[in-house]
Image (cartoon, rainbow, N blue to C red; front, side, top):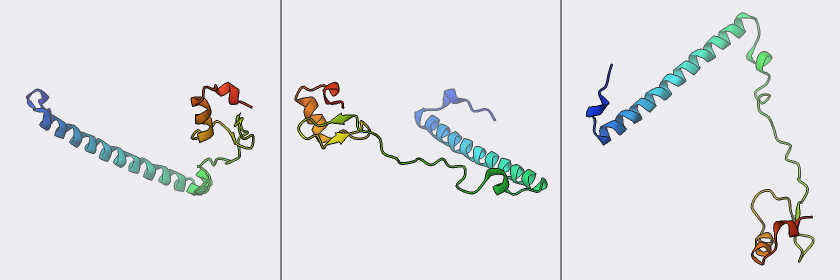
Length: 108
């Protein structure tokens, strides 16, 4: 089916694009589903289970340690306040920068 896009106005073209994107997603889901079925059939034919091949449900997901990071910056006005350099900048850090200090001046 050929569509002559030169004769379409802006709204018709946008409608065609959105319909094509929806159809593209549907086709991708169908293909993934068929591939999943083939993989399951092959695993079963070989006498294994999905867990034997891929491990448990959580085995495929990497987990972060959630450990602490050593501080890189210290507040000169209050040495107990430190910052690792990750995440949102603390207020004291921003205030020090506005006061004319450099990041290297606050580094530990």
